[in-house]
Image (cartoon, rainbow, N blue to C red; front, side, top):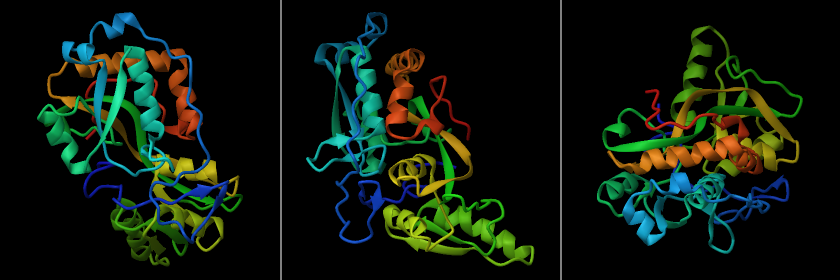
Length: 301
């Protein structure tokens, strides 16, 4: 199952600010707001042996043209100044530094990223895209993260995601958690003669998280990096409920057969090996999805 697709886990709706460690329900319609600033990881040096393998077009231009769809905190979104930031952005910037080039980000509708890569307009597609067997027929991927579904609960109030019958569970509307995952678990409860899960859907993920912080629901279900970021910003009010499941790799998309996929893979692996990758993941609170080996075309389904 795709973590992010037009009809996948990610709803193309806004996430609001998790401000100062406290979550706010009112006055949060600006999708370009952000939480506390995250410092960039420094000290990333060019690796000449990898940079030498870049396609000539990129060497000559000195830049990677990256297509991205926003907002999707914490991976890619705009800060109050309008700058595109996030975990994905910091990772791509680190890869670009390893290759001795700059990343240039161009906004795109999510469903247009792969066709635009195929047309040669973008060098890379970077937008929390799940590396799937189907998509590998169109483009190649360099993997850099593993995302799944992750539940959260109030601190010290355990909820079992596999036995949440009768519990109030918050989800963001139209995500796969709302349309498939939690309803399937609720149906299983009913089939076993237990109370259904009381599914509470919210238009924005921040509102779902806020409901959990305030005790209006017993748990929430969301994509693992989204949940991890919410936990990091909640000032200890919420915590993970169980382990992440249904995990699949995120990948950066490049034209089919392009040597760029292998170059990006070597750059990511270099960052993993020198520890900078984990520094970036920890900065954004998404280290649970960190990988130890980057591959080209690592789809699991």
